[in-house]
Length: 255
Length: 244
Image (cartoon, rainbow over all chains, first blue to last red; front, side):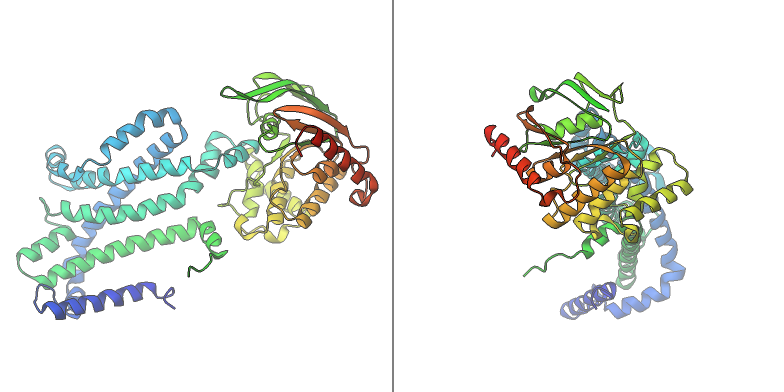
């Protein structure tokens, strides 16, 4: 039952937790969820949608660039030990750097428009994808490579039939983490030199002390994340059917 | 068919295959038995061309082995099936590598799956199959390429006794029908006797004894006194080598 309506179940838990918070605090800083819901429906098409569209565009472009760069580089260093020795230390040095602090630098270098925002999201999330891809490639059992070679698969065919399908579930998991991080970074970037974007809309509503609209923006951001997560679930269902087939074999219930 | 002459192989500085020489003729079979870590899997990988022969020579049909040979089929210990591909797509892999056209692939996959009684499982993923069915798929994937030499690395070690015997019978039927030469690496005495026309005992990278099995391939061999006699003989030789 819960499995079938899990999203609805999540919405109900959040709705009631929110309602309780609203009642406990008794202030319009946390407006009632049904008021926000009504406002969200009223302003969605004329006001929120253009902001949401702009945010979605920035996130999608950043994620697509990150996937190409991250999976490409991850495959390269995962399959080649010498390159791994050279490139991985650079990745480890750059990964923990708080790249969010570079937004002013990116704005100076790439302008105040979309480019600097997309580049900042990309440089933050690409490392998660590089590391996940590299580790996933290294975790592929050597027996699969022997199996592929013994069947006569060429180098490209080994990537096509072995390496890429083997790492795809992990890439999709990295993508889920990436979506969460991207939305957080997106919110930050849209607070600077932006006139469109859901982050801008939320902070603008806050500065105008319009908490109902601010929460409507937060709901929109949450729904954007949900839509992206569901899209990744669909991709997983389609491309990684074998993982679910394995799960259906059954795991013992934990007591 | 297969001639191995003075082959040595080392992992870094440790020599794991030491001066191995033997030959099997076309249509013959050979079992290599030994404990874990004795070098038998490495030897099989050398015969398959999966590892480079740096010292000594391996010749198959008078041609020196350099790299993977298209007519050698390899069945690995854990089947080597790709879990992300269903049975059909696992079986077709070698044919795709050989750029066989789609229609021909379909015909060949259907024929081999029917021969191995897995035609009802073509849409299933390996995780949805039993151990015996997975092994059949691994065999089908190799047989679809019409090999003249089959190399098997402890192929039935993960199977229960009944399924293991069923698979041994299957290999024997394939051998009898196709006159297929094969080398099987095993640590099971009965399996070595049932499937080996020649049986080699391997210890610390070397062959210590050879045994001929004149009863190989005879029907109902497992129930015959000769089977137990050769098994006892093999057991005794292994005991002499402190392997039992």
